[in-house]
Every structure is written in structure tokens, then in C-alpha cells.
Length: 149
Image (tube, rainbow, N blue to C red; front, side, top):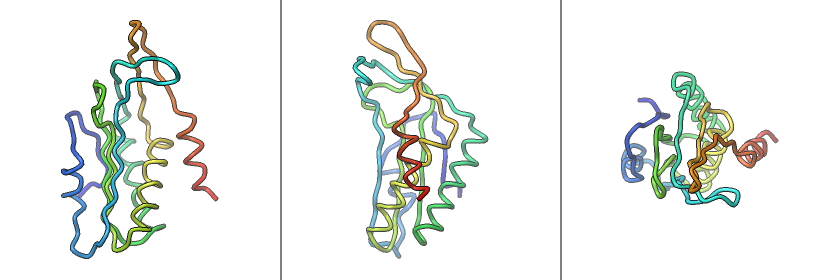
């Protein structure tokens, strides 16, 4: 089973929870990234995500393998939406189940930070004044570098 995917339709936390459910696990941690209505002082109406899907899946799988090596045996899954998303839609979900909570929290944080930094995904914001623009997240890149130490 692939543990990283792109989706062109809506996804739910419950779907991801079921995918990572494991009788050997005592902890489940999830991160949901939602489309918000503002960024850097501008009112956002919707987002559009594009990705280099073939490379993105390979890199996403690599990130999850790294997380398993760093934090121990766990069931992990990450899905990122592509296409046009509205305010409140889920853009990305990471789900982790592990025997203990510490590893679940650490692995979840590692995966979302690395996905934002390394997976070839582009985000276009559509603003209330009719403008739109492709954006990057420098905070995402900085957070991923914290894992290098």
C-alpha cells in the first residue's frame, strides 16, 4: 500500500484514521491543514494546488520511510489535495498510529514539515480583489531545516 498520495477529491480525517488503525498501537495523532481565508494581510477566497505527481509520490514515500526509521514502527499515511479548494477544505492530512504517543507526535511533525519543504507542490491563492498569485512558504522551509540537527 502506498503511504503517500495526492487526491483530486475531498478527503477526511476519518478515512485516514481507518487506514492507519493498528491493534498494536496505543496512540493516534493526525494533522489536518485547512484552507484559511487570509494570508499575509490579504483576503483569500480559494486555493489551487498543482504538483509534479510522479516525483511527489516518490518523495512523499521517502519522507514516510525516513519517519519510520527515525521514530520506530508505526502505521503512517499522508494525503495532499490537488486542484481548486475552497475555504475550510482540508488541503493535507497526516495520520500516524504508534505504540506510544511521543513517537506519534514526533513522526507527524516530521512528515508535515518535510512534505511542505520537499514535495513538489505549488499553491496559488485567489484573492478577493480578483488577483491571484503563486506563493511559497518560507516558514515551512525553515521548520524542515530544524530536523537536520
